[in-house]
Length: 198
Image (cartoon, rainbow, N blue to C red; front, side, top):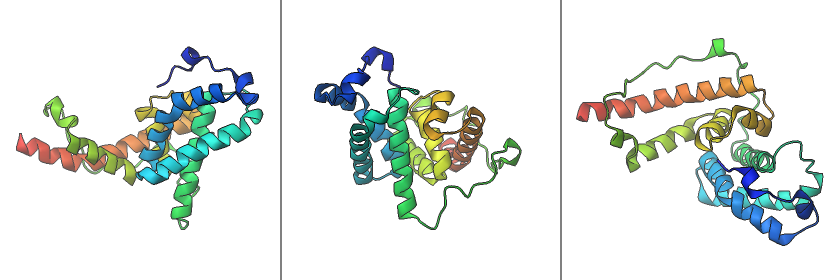
């Protein structure tokens, strides 16, 4: 997570087209924005397209940035919207709005839970385990995936995640819980096999 206060961006300089300040902003946010896009889309070229579009739109629309949210929240919002729009274009038959009501009572309970307490820590950081996690993240519905990436991978606060996605904090928490439960179930089969090999 980026400490925005440490970078002290001059919004007025950005609005005035200061290319040095804009380059500094790009350098600061290049990696987290690319990481978000790559985790959302699982395709390097698509992630690079989202990255370029995000900074292009930021440059074109900086005059409209009112500072009600932080600069990072604004950039993440642009990137998340671009990634979601790209997913919609690739799968037009799926609507991101067609999701069950955000009620914790409706949360599906995972059918399989594995107690991973007995696995050595090294099992969780292998290349294979990381690839398995990436595949599991890609299987999440887009609305859950983006919340999980922003909150658990990028380390953003619940409040900032809500601001980026225009969600209430309750909705963020609900989607995050659903994402974590789905990932836990998805990874249970894999780690069950690892336990058998121990």
